[in-house]
Length: 462
Image 1 (tube, helix red, strand yellow):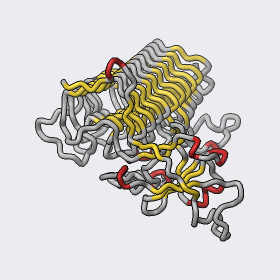
Image 2 (tube, one colour):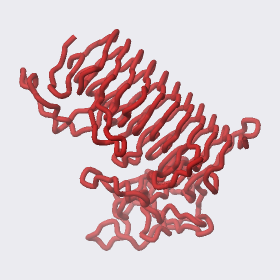
Image 3 (cartoon, helix red, strand yellow):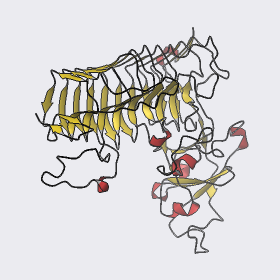
Image 4 (cartoon, helix red, strand yellow):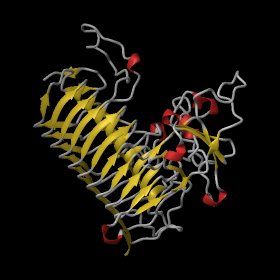
């Protein structure tokens, strides 16, 4: 194994950005479409022409966030603005500026930047119209920080390194600030990833359009004691990754790109995960995305001793999708404060007994600790689940999803043993089918009831 390690624990930074200082006053652009005035009095906008020497082979200010695979997008449900933003970022004293789509928006938006059509010039305005010469201004110029040049390199260890400002695009492909680039038997420990435009760390097959050689090993990776802060779309991503140990990491602030409908967003997103242990991690302040998402055909995984905290506009904290065979265990975790993501204005008030006899859910309110979609054999034990907008557990049967596997899961054989449910708004547990089991649980402050059959809509009160 080859090890890349910080010498004597000294701080080591790898940045996908460069410091810039050659600013001039912005000229030749109107702030108001109906006015010939270039700049209003008191507004200070600066112009930076990019140095071609800093952008050899890759210019993130030329590329939009999503280029590779767009077929999965539901355009009628998605605000495409962030998908069509440029990948390039601008930082002032280590904090990112907000990208706007039109030059004129700089007239009303401080701490922002705009990119000209050809991606060669950036205009920006600092908070309080300050002089950028008095600040550290950095611009991103590379896609990744630590990544092999060719795929499949394996048995590599990365330890104690901070990687920042990677200008990768929206997955897929999953190309992280730190990337295993389809290699196996990597150890990534004691590292920090700061402000990745797309993905923090990738450890799988990168993209489902790749061929999988017959002898290819995918996964067998350890990620431990890392801190992944403010990844735009996904903190840790793995496609077809198996035999993983993900432990003692802090993943916070994921999802600021608002790409939850890209279907690759989350604090951690792994496809076809088997024989893996995810333990003692802290997920917090995940925005419009899941803390943890296991997507399709997941078997023999244990999710234990994690903190899933403060999901902001989050539909669910943990999502187990379309898993028909094999057991997955979620035990000894704390789930706390899942706000839900829905339009509160569309939730109709139900007075008296008007909602008692509904035959189906309206599907408006969400906010679940655990959401199982077409998933069987999910065992949930010894968890503290509190302050979920809708329910501690919610499931749907999606039999048609598993292409090539004859059928999907029917959301049966879910077992809830010795959990504590506290203040779940609509119910502690929502079950769509029979043959599930709940024993030894404690239900506290459950105003909406304990169990709810999501077909009949009838609550069972404690």
